[in-house]
Length: 248
Image (cartoon, rainbow, N blue to C red; front, side, top):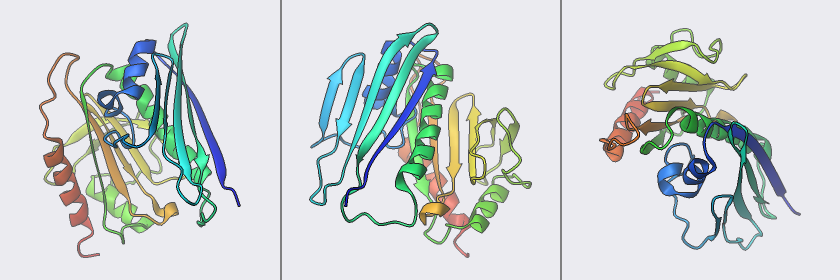
């Protein structure tokens, strides 16, 4: 049995073709938007045809599973166009209670939007990605409610719209003042843009996984050094998140 799939996304960005190439084809650029910017490409097939095509293909597993990520870039009247294609096969023994392609497509909608935000508001800036997840039992809607309350959102996230001003107040961490930059209707999700970052909190309940965070932090100007200990900040956020559910 084959479980082949293809997910295709297209976005336009107010950036040059070279800026888009840097964002998708270099580790420094991917740190500003990618779900896994620090992953090694060792052992993978990497095709670089700057500045128009970048592709990464993982080796095929014994069960036939593989993933390929392809980026096609060209210029348009307002900047550049990017076509992103995630294709592959989940393997002959893939079984799950959810539609992998459907849920992954939703995820890529978010990351393509995050790439747009990066190239629109923070082009060329140095970036750091901090991420982590809650304990295994924090995989319910009730866990999400607890998270939003701890962030200071007493009314939750369901009624938030793009452009709404919000203030997040996680105890022991700096106050976050920003605007909602993305929503996923019907999903437990929170995305906030601030002057120096993009903050993301998301429930993975539908996949049977605990909720998680993934924040992209940028230096304050194009030529400034990023004065940030990524590991230390990631630990602070992880400690805060785990503390919410210690006694659950």
